[in-house]
Image 1 (cartoon, rainbow, N blue to C red):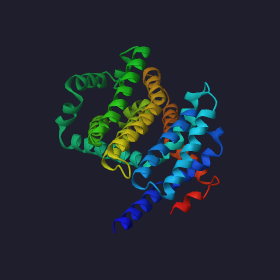
Image 2 (image 1 turned 45 degrees about the vertical axis):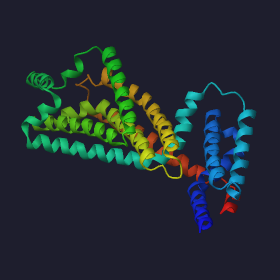
Image 3 (image 1 turned 90 degrees about the horizontal axis):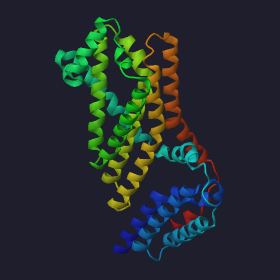
Image 4 (image 1 turned 30 degrees about the vertical axis):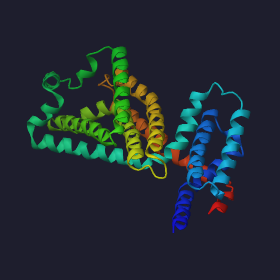
Length: 337
């Protein structure tokens, strides 16, 4: 009975990881496509799987296969050339996008959470006139009402110098991104809470201007930088949810190993947002203040920003994934089943 259970566990282990092993085997046939960092990650992952297999199935075909695969990866590491100087470019153009397809569900969940609480924020503001003030604060509300009275409702974006606003906003947004990621250690609940805070604030803010008859004026101005800013906060939320999932659902890995892998993946997601936060900070510091720009210019910036986000975080990762699936695969792993 114990032998049958062990065999069933091994079969489940193989089924869960077979596609990954096949992909690794295929990649190792042509190490020119692998960066040293990617090769190292691949070796560590295979070593972890091999250790697990040695522990529970020491004399199985699975262990022998993984040992061969890990040995091949080890040889590639020490025969590969030194890392090239375009490491950063490779990370953003190949390494990160090729992995991010795995986290589309967490990205969608982060978006849905944010959208839900944005609606709740707007609905609460419509139901209770004091709600907006409790969320945005008396000082901000009074200043905004004064700006509206002066026929310049978006004057808040002109108060600070361009460079100071650019640096301040960029640094603050990166802090928010890191916080959304790090709060994932609370089984993802902390990340959900942070998304909720920001979403309710956004929903309340937009409803306030709607109530004043300034919805379009506020939207065309705020979303010049907000399209990228809000989008990458949602992406940072995705990073936190990845960490949370690694704790709650470790799969065949130990909880600690799963958590370590989740933190590493989440950190890569956060790093990917930094260039976008810089772009958003630049737009808020230097462009958003131009409140008299034509509508078509604002719409063009907003549309381009949205397309950029959708391309980099949705279309491109899925495109790379589909391309990798069409590459020739080696079927030797099937012998282990």
